[in-house]
Image 1 (tube, one colour):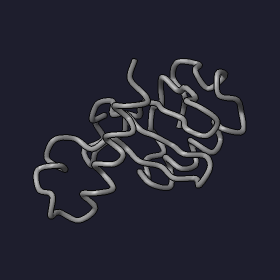
Image 2 (image 1 turned 60 degrees about the vertical axis):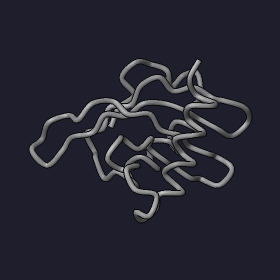
Image 3 (image 1 turned 90 degrees about the vertical axis):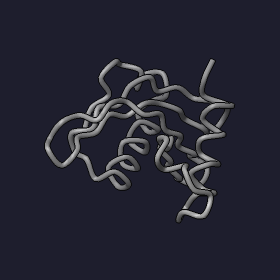
Length: 106
């Protein structure tokens, strides 16, 4: 797993290790490409991650949020994941989406 664009320098080595470990733990993709890392406040880190699908093809960058205060990771859900408010984990996915769009985008 790599930080493709050198933005890991902006958040520091320790935070980078934490972010990469959380991505590996949650997405189980050793070939993940991480970009545009940036710190928002004391504990929030935003970025983008591109992972491979079962066919070995990269699926495209998606935003993510890491909260260092509780070591939580959330990748911004895509459209189909938000179609039904009754689907499993909908509230968590919606919260991640809101945090990303409120805090991580300029």
